[in-house]
Image 1 (cartoon, rainbow, N blue to C red):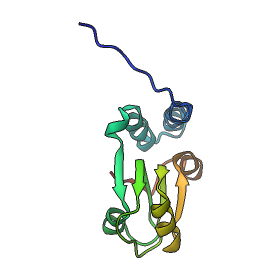
Image 2 (cartoon, rainbow, N blue to C red; image 1 turned 60 degrees about the vertical axis):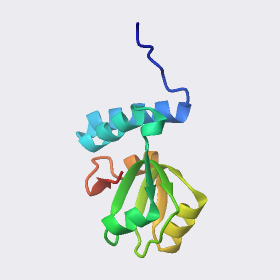
Image 3 (cartoon, one colour; image 1 turned 90 degrees about the vertical axis):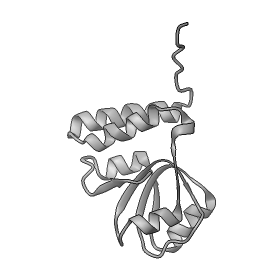
Image 4 (spheres, rainbow, N blue to C red; image 1 turned 30 degrees about the horizontal axis):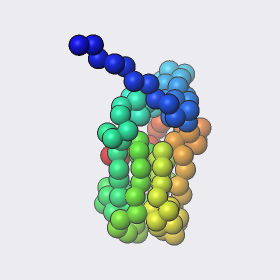
Length: 122
């Protein structure tokens, strides 16, 4: 039996993976290589993080990246910048109401090309 290699068909994911890998090489930032490897895995293995987890594991003003979805269960009491592939409507409103911001991973790479002061939450 041979194992079939499946490729990603979503053009946003494939371009994101390519951008993360090139950003990792150009800026010597291993965090973007790690995110690219996680995004290359099957979609069922993507991280799904609730707002309550972000609240527990972050401090005021931190920048985090979620290689997957951010969901709206729970509350958040301090502003954080969250970069993720997808936000639910509830999560987006709770984060922005707390004074934080929701950005895409692409925007986060442009904002912090070296990946300094960015943490992965999964």
